[in-house]
Length: 343
Ligand code: NAD
Ligand code: LMR
Image 1 (cartoon, rainbow, N blue to C red):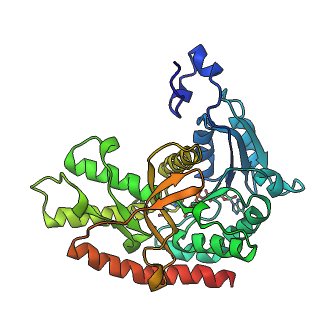
Image 2 (tube, protein in one colour):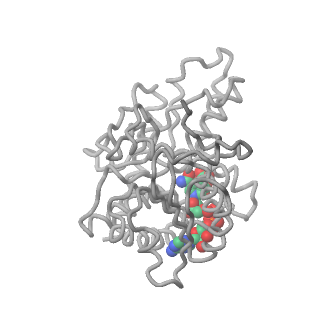
Image 3 (cartoon, protein in one colour):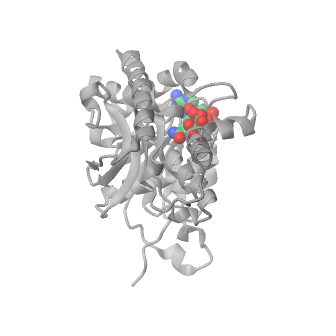
């Protein structure tokens, strides 16, 4: 029997088999902000994913160029670009899509917080959310644009206004925090990063990102408190590390494209009813709703309707409980800011 094609098997273009592989799950996917630093490599990775058969790339500029370029790659999907100069561009880009990814918006420069992006990105995301509500209310929406702690509530609020909010299909993409945690902890443990998983909860900015290291079973006995604190800090401020290194040329794009493609792949696996598709994401969550915090990142199981189960975050150490209290204060304000923007 023929094994299921994966994203990486799509790269093996020398074998005849690769060309004749039929699409296993015919999903229509749109990327909004597709010509940007994240949008381009993300679109490339989606073009290599055999679960995607119809890829729509929307941007205010250069989406047609990116789409034409990608359309020469011999994988089983069509790619089309859309820009606002075409009549009904967003409608055509969004119609009947299963998954919509939003990396549209400005990135940070050194010295800025993600919240400093709010004024520009809130308007961009809310405009796109209105169009998704109108043209693709059925789609799973994956929000990458920062500040995620506020842009996700903005999308929810816009969809509520249109009467089509489905909390099971709205995701803040926090996968980059998870993959950074896997990478950074593997450097300390001297292990294979692909085998490492850290439970990262909260939100997607600085102190709202909480890696629960106390749940790690095999931490080296020799690790000091200073090393552990440095690891937590690096996971929380990994984004700043990239912003600083890029020195004014933006923030993480390539690792984010990888993270976004990985998350989209999981969403499609869930839609396809595959078993035990567990990822972390910032979603409409009951965990702290009674404290006025409507969104929280934790592990979730994905299924055919989107979020199937929201997992409890488990046991925390006293230090992690303290971090969680601080996280909740900031998260509450970030969420309210997003909600009030739409109101
Ligand atoms: P970028 O400036 O390189 O690209 C953004 C793209 O969005 C541009 O091509 C721009 O033309 C497009 N755009 C702007 N307004 C638009 C609109 N109304 N409709 C469609 N497209 C529009 O920026 P980037 O580096 O790709 O980052 C994009 C966003 O992703 C930023 O807000 C950044 O902070 C965020 N980000 C999030 C994560 C995460 O973990 N969630 C990681 C990295 C970056
Ligand atoms: C990241 O975590 O890399 C992104 O949120 C981008 C940023 O501004 O740090």
